[in-house]
Length: 417
Figure (tube, rainbow, N blue to C red):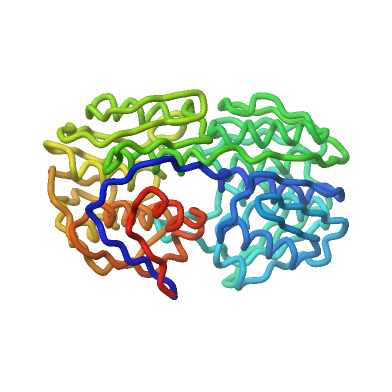
């Protein structure tokens, strides 16, 4: 198993470009199964989670080719309605395939999906949604069986805001009979981007990016070229890196409008930064102030930046509270920061108190999940001495060749097999 060796304490400087958004690319790959035509996806990141979903698509009949950041997918025929358990257990986003395969074949056998260990993430919203579409769902110890002669448009109110469930039901509604209304839908930027693509292919979607989405079902969809939007989580993570040790760091090929909640925190803390149309430049400050932060659905402070931001709070003057409202186990990684010297007290599974500033020291650690894993990389980069991070497959799921890109800024980070 691969690991990172990091010698910290170095000042980083230069430009780092943001890649295509993982959470946008995954959704359009799944949506491509609705059409028999070939789709071309550009600016597609070469990361584990994308590649595993492409493997699942190939296993059920898709023809997939990749050249650099261009991926072509053609699914003229779906040859299997049963997904490989070994592949599905690696990524939770396999749930996105429910609708497309059900529409094309009338049946899907879905093993229990895997992904990050960041708290209970049941697929009950997906099950409820597809039952409202008229599908029959059976669950056993091995997973779920979905069946339907056709999907019928419905009105569905999400019991809580869910990005992936919003996208899955929106995609499925495009070819359901009649009209579908999704209420209390998520508003993340990846959702209107996906809707825009589907509309180019013949779908009739209105309201994507708001809490109410209306979809008129159509009989068929064509395909088109889809350019993956910049990854706002990667952009925010690199901006936080600049605040930690940049002299300065310029984050390019991004959309700063997606990070306004982060900039509000920067302003309160006294972090120096500049913003352009497609770039952010961030510099380390000696005296930054502690702030309280609460994660929230977009346009609030995203849960996926909570872990990198907590690293920044360990270097801020005063006491901060981090309130994680989305996932119940997403603060457990802070025990690893305490091993590095951070002063953190866990109040309950959703809240921690961070006292700073505290120096961090290199330790041997294991990446618990995707975002916490990258947060440990940030901690290692500012720590004194050597940090060793195992289980970096979790980091590779969302960040492409991250050690090479950080090394170009002056970081001393090496991948060891």
